[in-house]
Image 1: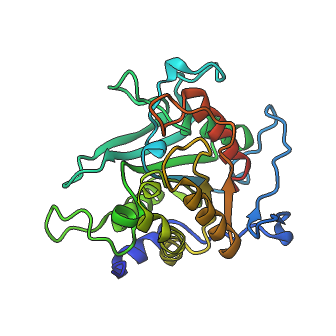
Image 2 (image 1 turned 180 degrees about the vertical axis):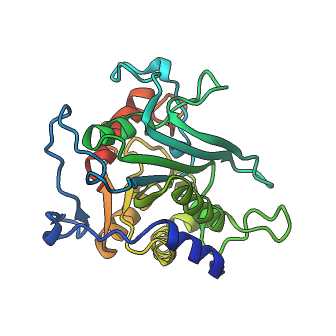
Length: 301
């Protein structure tokens, strides 16, 4: 499957290339071969402006891609570590297209608005975005936006793989990978911003089948490569599968994630150790999502 030329043209016009953080940019190589962005040292009350005076502002856009832990399966009412979790943050726009895997996909296309919990579901209305957006806004005032594209119960092997046929309905429609890239490019254009990082929070479903797990490293490397055909050089932040996962092939998925971070430039692993899961697994608790968002922000350019 090839991404249509029209899509490539739109995406490249919407989001310029972001150079991979290396020594010349103040970054440093990690022990696993990945490249890590330098830590932010600015005080929270000394946020930098988003652009030079007189220059038109362009937002730095961070995409959240993946399955149910990217969707977010907790409630802000259970948060104890973020005092303003339910307060809309207009500094950070959030666009979301989310669903659970079905055929055709029953999308919830949520209009772009201030960063805030989702409405309509009192028990599942937040994920890592609430703390991620706040942490980034402390770095650069009005500088960031978040774009979420996530499908619950979706595997990389069957659903997200670049040449997958899912979904088959509507007939002759684009596959999930193409939809993901198209949506992200469209939001870059709408938000007048540049894609500076993609957080990949996925792997739970691939950890349930041996053939899915065996193919995971190759599938993820291909997904990153094909994404960079459209968004050249974009860094990937891979949220490692939780060490608390009881999926039979969880160790294989974590090994595959580390292999990709070692072998592919510009890929950083975020360790999920210590993040609490809900009793029903594999979803994080509300405070687990808050901690995860902070960890992702720490390595976001």
